[in-house]
Image (cartoon, rainbow, N blue to C red; front, side, top):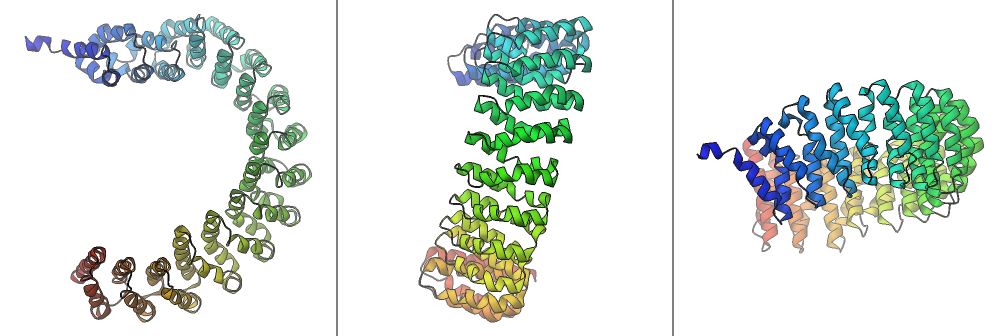
Length: 587
């Protein structure tokens, strides 16, 4: 008897759990649908489970969302692609609920199922579903239908294709702004499936209606469609249909539409070609760069370098550079920051003379900006300018500003400068570096912020790698070792960290003669934190120095530390001794 009742058990449990008041139980039940379907088998899943799901009128959005997600991958459990149409009714119901995320997930699952369905099934089941939703009394169904046309259209016979295009056109003129918004969002996907001759006539008239919508939320979504449609049309059609629209959008009364236009204008330049870009889009872009809304200027400023790449250097200097100068002193700090993040990329485009004459003064003013993010964005891209104007000019004009930033009150700015120093060092060369930046590198080891001290220790190591051990022995090691006597224990800890980083670069001889004695002396420090850091440093030195040095100097020091009153010092000393034993055994 138990064997006969076995297949009934899963559906009974599911029914019980789906009717339970506890939402977590209902959720768990939905997430186990695939397991239950496997237990029931394909036929019973089709005949019992799917109808039950259709009738289930749960009103909790989380449960419905999980259901919409599960059904999207359910084709194998109902018997494969030939039975995929069984899954459409429950998802159709979910396309009409109020919660947006549930509808979106249901549309996504329908698209996934539709993409796998056979052509005759699409015509028989999927296209009627799209038409039902598009004619739905409640706006939610009509909103959902817009996302399904690109799946339904390719398989439809000619008469149905005409009908689908007409229905989509009606959705674009729907009374509800939400429906028109959805139609505008999905227009690019639908247009990609429409034949070229209908694209020019039907789709472009739909698009023009959307661009003149009285709701700015619809128009701004139509802006996104500009670039998508531009890629589908021939360049001459793009110039005729899309170009006037984007030019109008750049002067739209709603700042949100202008903001979208500023974001999309670069993609459109690629679609229309160089000549229309010069005559039509440059004036539109200049208007956006000088817009009275800061958000629009920010979006436009972020595209400056990309836009200049399409133009000739002469046009960039004539039209775009005056706007860039204005933006560098813009009242919005975010606008200046957006400009600073891309402006360095203009140097290779404009060439050496224009960079020296026009861009350098702008770089300098942005390097002295009161807002740290602006300064950071300039610092991080200095190498692009160096490639164009050469190190001599860069050092004369920008280096004083960099030195000033090295003492900036915002620690993140100081950090950015430190991270840039090794690159600067390799570009400037030893002599120049010693004169101008050497003292700064030592100064950072005594910074009040730990992240700066840590970065400064790494910086010292990278400089030693760049200029070699001999240079480091003259210019870095004596100054670093002097700081081990600093009265503040945190600075002494930084020096120990620097020693552990420098030792592998300096080699065994210098480590034994110069670095190791300082570490051993520090083991007598009265602060336990220093002593257990000494144990860590000694452990890192064991593989670098000779075995005799380990036996004579390092191990006695570690043995002494392993008997220290402080528990942490004893722990790290014993760890180092164990490491020493393992290295001895392996050698």
